[in-house]
Structure formats: C-alpha cells, structure tokens
Image 1 (cartoon, rainbow, N blue to C red):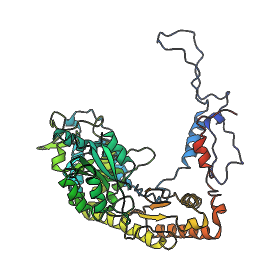
Image 2: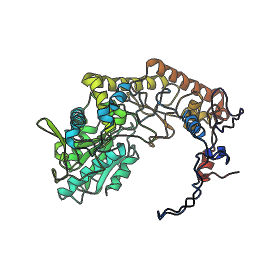
Image 3: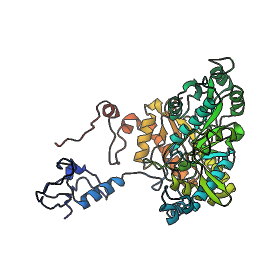
Image 4: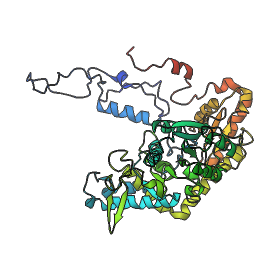
Length: 501
C-alpha cells in the first residue's frame, strides 16, 4: 500500500495536480518503523526526541510527491528557453560523460597534488584557453558563479589600488543598463557608484561618460574603475567602448567587463582588444554547462598581466611536467582566497570538453550563429512589436509592449500568454531603461524551425491582443498547474506558512 488517495478530479491526461506532503499525512501510516523504547537512557546530553514537525508519509508517497512536482519544471531539454541576458542553450551530453569519468568525479580536493595531476592539467589547459579567448593572460578559476566572479574582479581592482597607495579612488562608474549585481558588487567592495545614463541609441555615449568621469574631479582622480557589460543588456555592442576605455585609463581607472554576454563574442572578439582589464566569464552560459535552479555555476576571472599579481589564489602552475596550486605564500600581492578549495571542478571538465569539441573555428561559429539567430527574430517580430533601438543587435534582441499597450495588453500579459502556448517566457521588464521590455536570446543551438514556431506564436499573440483584448489576456494561462495569480495581493499579503484547515 502506498497510502495514496487519488483525486480523479485533479488529474487529467497524466497531468498531475499535487498537494502538500502534510496534506497526505495519515497517522496510521508513519514514514518509518522504530522499535519501542527499552527505557534505557543514553547519556548523550541531548534532550529526548520529540515531534520533528515532518509529515509522516511512506517512501512511495514522498518519492511520487517530488517526482510529480518535477514534471512542472520547464528546462532546456523540454524546449526553447528564450531568456535574454542568461544564455540557456543545449548542453552536449558528451560534456556530461566526461564529467562523470571516475578520475574526475571521484577525486577529493584534499588529495595530494601528486594523485590529481590529470585534474590539475585540465584546469591548466582551461586557464590557457580562457586567457587566449579573452586576450587576458591572468586567469583564476576559483569563483563559483557570475556574481562571485564580479566580486573577484572588483576585489582585484580594489587590491591593486590599495597596494599602489590609491586609497582615494573610491568611485566606480556603472551604466544604468547594468546587471543589478554590478552596483551591489561595487558597494560590497567599499566603492561608491556613479551612474552613467544610456544614450538614445541604447549605448553609452562619450559625452555622458566624460560627464560622469570628471564629475567629482577634473582629472578623474577619484575614479577606481568602471563596470560595463559588452554587449550590453539592450543586446547592443558598445560602439564607443575603445574611446571610453582610453579615457578611463588616462584617468587611472580599471575597466571591469561583465562577461555574462561573452556568448556573442567568443572566438571572434577578444575583450582585451577593446580595453578590458579584468572580466568574469560564466562557464555555465558561454561554454554550455547546466545552470539554473541554484547551480552549480562557475565564474572564472581573466585579467591583464598588471592585475594578475593581485587576483585571488589558487591558480594552477606548471613546473616541468608537474602541476601544482599556487598559494598566498607564492604571491604576496594576491588579495587571498575567495572560498575553500579550487572552484567548481565539474564545471571545468564540462567547459573544457565544450571548448575542445568546437575548437577555435567552432567557437567563432557559436557566436556568429547566436548573433544571426537574434537578428532573425528581431527582423521577423519587428512588425508586430516595438523595436526601440535600431539594429543590428548582438546575441539577444530587445522588444517592448508599446504597440500592445494600445489594447491594454502588457508585457506581463504577453509572458502569461506564452506559458499558455507552451513556452517559457523571455526575460521581462529588463533592462530597466525602457518601459515594458522583453529581452529574447535564441542562442545558437536552436534550429530555424524552432525559431519560426516561436515567431508564429508571438505573431499570434500580437494578433490576439488586437482581436481579443485585455479581458482574454488577463485570464491566461489556463492550462498550467497554477493559474494566474493576483500578484499584487500575493506580494502584499504573502502566506508564508501552511496551516491545517
């Protein structure tokens, strides 16, 4: 007996509704059988075990509960995942096979270096590839995710200024289109953020940059650096970036590049060539390793030879035929360690497998196809939706709901309609520089057929906005496990704890 009490009214066509575990609890069906107490007291110093507060369910009940809920999840293996500014693309299964090799999967970070030479060699090779692709030879693999890589990059800049006696440099310049983690990271590192407004074409202008650069000092002597995402979060390449980087360097600041959008450049453009001093790379995005749902991620940083002396440890070094991990004692100018051990090793295996499978020419095709796909979508959808900035775009295209608002249909309504059509929505209301934004990244792994089906769906939604209006859209989605919520009420009056009725 599993203890299941099926409700035929809630299950349709193998599409499961699911209640909370506490609602499945039946006192006569405990989840575990324990012998009666013998009355012997153990001197553990711990109080007698009381009610654990967990539902008493059988193993099949617990298993089915979580498996049923897992069927509600949408993933890149289900279908097209058009999130903008967060590359979600197919993960080749070869990468997974390599990461599961026993010599990689079963090692421990505290093993003697002599017993993990193969793993260290892999990390060394990955460092070399990342340094070559970015033009930035100093590479530290330790950061565990994109935001952690940002922190490592800005801590490296902070360390450089401190060692050089530039403690007065406390200002970091950040565009208003930046990822939200950028200003947060700068503040965490003890800097003050000075905003740069985005120009009318969706890019930084030299004039706006100069105004921010010299706002506090005519020479820019208070500037520690700038944090810029390139391509930016409007899906555009910063065409003035070379002149802006030169102005920053003349003022004594460092250029930190948020590498979240490196998928648009990899194999074709080296960030060092447009003035970058330090950047992070999301291995779990550009180099196709699984991410989302909490991780694991990996955000190595790459930097110039000048900044390499300040970046974190460990770095893998090669001496003769042997590999070893650099320590703080080996490089006294380092800012130190960011975390325990050496980083997300499984991600290193997957990323290097991806890189070596493609080679230099294949990586160039990756970025080329990603940019082509985004421009294809923008061209196809530009008649039905508002395109705020003239193209071409890079690996993601930006639309707004300006045309649909004429019928009182908003970006949120469009996102809910996509769910009804079986698509995970694109990124909505980001970047914040415009109203009603929809940021779409098709990636290079989607076929033209898949993109055409998405275009057909978006075109149908635009037609429905004209023909059916807001009342129809406010009823969507109808077919999902959870219907449309009153999101304002949910935010203002959240129910945070379940109570038995």
